[in-house]
Image (cartoon, rainbow, N blue to C red; front, side, top):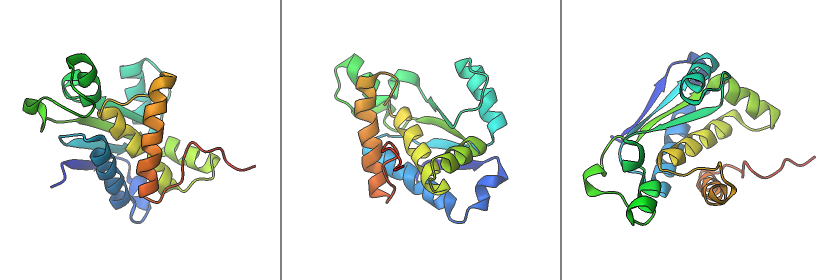
Length: 173
């Protein structure tokens, strides 16, 4: 077993042939690249659920595309823990090596609207959100420009290996 659970709460996620396999592949690729240990769950849900989660955990009363909830906070988070404990990125304490990495939640409606607005394939955009969420579980961030310079190129490399175009490249006019 891969330790990756896809939990489909909104049936719309099942309307795309091969999507769940594609998202699992994206999750595995991101986990390998980030050297993330432990299992995690990807909740494929609706905008209403993401709005509630976004409100409850971030104080923002609107739906968003993806949220990540790292397990064990900084203890499991190899990137952050490495910074604080003198370990290199990706190196985790042995006792936490197989701990639960956390949860990711993705909203169908927001994902679909974003894909349409950017003229992207829905499955490719959803796979990007899975990769993005997994990298957050591994401790990567993009709030500060210096952090984004690390996280975004890693996302692009992972997506390229999956045959997905650079999501940060501007669309041709």
